[in-house]
Length: 307
Image (cartoon, rainbow, N blue to C red; front, side):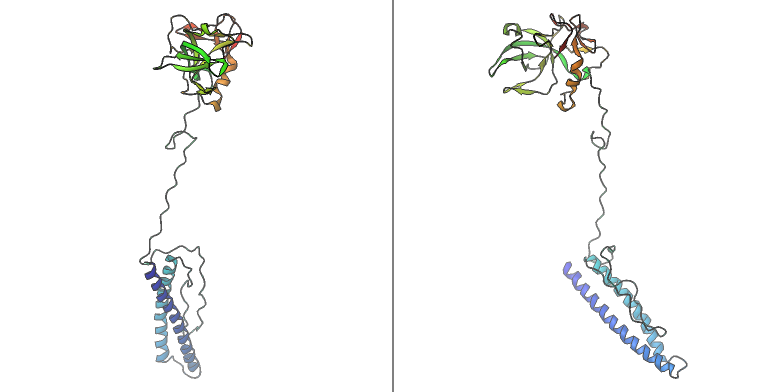
């Protein structure tokens, strides 16, 4: 395809050069006729009229070939060397061709040349997804407020606990939180609660923290405790509850994240408002934690933080 187009282009260029030479010849002949007429002839001779007619026909042919030449050059990625309609000398004004010039590379490419590929159509731009939300350009769901409703607090049954093999201050616990299999939980309670008191007891656990390794063992939840620097007590859910029962706080819709994003610091934002009141009741912003309508409590501590 490229070879055929190149040969056609060379032929067009050759014809254009020959046409220019013929124009120059006609100019000379017309000038000679004009000089002869000025020396005595009052009316144009038949030779002059013939030359005029031939000149006009040639003008049209040259314009056609220049158009074809330009189209072929554009389609083959070459610069065009002829533009516009050539000015051919006539009896009244025998001026040379002056409008031959180089065309700028930015000229729009023609689609008329035979055997060349059509111009590629621009693909429509894809719409950007808005707000980092779901696909299809749909807006993201509004961010939920950061409060205790985002925390997955549940009743858990600590089936067993033993000291961490690589950390003297940590217990490794097996805890049932109402799922198909128990979770492994690691707690720094060795110096506060004797090992025998860690066995077979109920507790409240935060279940949607991101799992993290502690001395080589993955911890999958956190036991919630009433705490001071000197004393720590595991919070006790009300009697009669079972593993997996949710902790409720009146006025706050329970809608826990599947897993808390550490970058959003949801637990850290709620933590300062987690406390035990003067009645040993666990609270959030002064509102009691309840399970099945009954409060979650500490054993002895009052007016302390929960963590």
